Length: 95
Image (cartoon, rainbow, N blue to C red; front, side, top):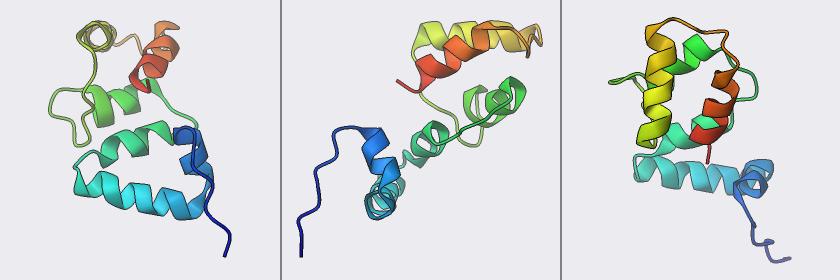
């Protein structure tokens, strides 16, 4: 049986169904599966992401750098859901 190729990054894990299943189980065990779910999102709406991942107390709240969190909160408070800054902030949240 051929050896499994060592993944170089998270994208490699997501592409491989077997590795993704194992990594997903690990993330659940470590209570960080919300981060894996978040990075797998392909299309999104800023308001939905805010309510699910960014809002304080959200069901799958992500641990974000303070600066990113502050910018997100400012946009959400003003309900600027179409603001172009969301793209940059979502990208920063996936790092």
